[in-house]
Image 1: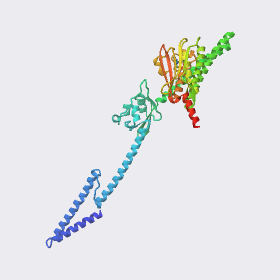
Image 2 (image 1 turned 60 degrees about the vertical axis):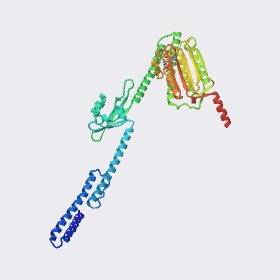
Image 3 (image 1 turned 90 degrees about the horizontal axis):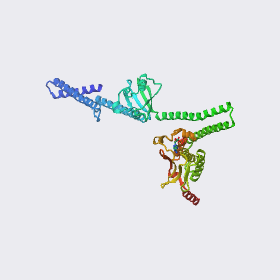
Image 4 (image 1 turned 90 degrees about the vertical axis):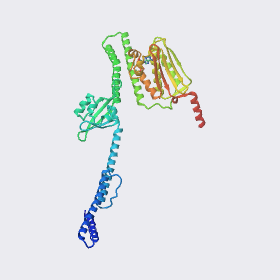
Length: 454
Ligand code: ADP
């Protein structure tokens, strides 16, 4: 301010001096005063122009740089420009931080919705949009209660019970394909809420499967146990003839056998689920596998039926499969034993191992049994799923055979396919990929190659 006054005084003094000089002898003081006033006015105009330029620059949103020189306006311009730069940098930084933060929320596998103090939607991520069917353009600033109409959610929202979550159906949920969401509200800021949603469909299904499994196992074990307990009581309390005693003991042994088979199948399943995948470097002879199964099939057919079936075992060229001998035997013998158990005598059962031109191999068990209706086929490999419950039990079935076959098949990178025509018969086949199949010739070739290298 001081320098502005000094400048004004100097300009006016100079102008007055000039007026005094130009006036000559006449009226010197009047002209000096007029020149001083004109000098002051000129300074005022120039100063206002500089001020206006700065104001225009500020109004235009501080675009290109100005040259206002030194002095009050120059310094004001410099300081404002520096302040603006700092504030722009800080805005940019906080914008970037906000973008990073929203990107992190966007990447979250859970649904995230930010609600204001009146439960209006301020922001949501893509997962939440899928869970609740929100549309970013349509639903911003809408009340969430108007968009999520589930009665459980409405009650939860109005109760503001932040301690617990609730489970509700997702937007896409249907009877045939249920979707379950876990939804939790968390308070933050001044009356605001963060809503987190999580798809728990798979978890719920796994839990339901676990419950069903425990219920099924308990039921399967309780039935023979009840029968056994009844016979034990009968033997203890009644005076029986030797023939009756022998008959009861035989029935008890049958029930004990049933429980043993069930426990063995359960153990096999649990081993399959818990053990590492079968090696691709251990080779199992298909001939030996077929011999073993043929022997077992003949025995089972004689035990279960009055006369044996017409059994045929067709082998391909000597061949080996990479994997676990125990698991492969378990899968193949389950298929063969099913065919024998469900096919009446006098009908054919064909078991074959064939090589495909592409190097794959298929193991087929074909029977002329009762066949299976189409609607049962997708569920046959579920644990304890049976088409004919009494036939399965009567022939010593546990309802776990095909579940075991499916597990073994998957663990060997193979594929199980089932074809069946009711009244005509069924065909179960396991197709092994080429890298799990080795012909005798390949084996000899690799042996001689190794011998040459050695
Ligand atoms: P189970 O021990 O009851 O045989 P599985 O898992 O091996 O259990 O088979 C499931 C169901 O599939 C059986 O209960 C039976 O109803 C049906 N099934 C399996 N194999 C055959 C077959 N070869 N012919 C007809 N039905 C079959």
